[in-house]
Amino acid sequence: MDRLWNDPAHWRTKADEARAVADHLRDPNARAHMRSAARSYDRLAELAEKHPLADVIKRIKPANDEVA
Image 1 (cartoon, rainbow, N blue to C red):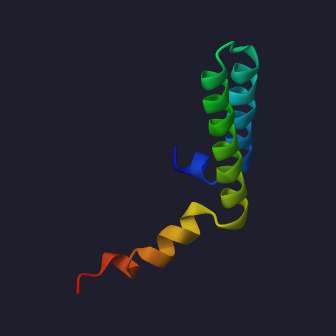
Image 2 (image 1 turned 90 degrees about the vertical axis):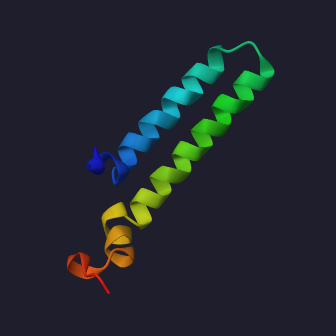
């Protein structure tokens, strides 16, 4: 599961799926929400490309889980 967080292709697939669902919705509000979700997935893909989660965790987690 952790690998998925770092995989831009995973988030792009989710974005494509959300857009496909949105295209079949009749309710304008539901369609808008699905398109918003797709944009969020696109953003996650961009973040995964630029800042893999593993690097973020290394920056915020103390080395060797040291207790101060």
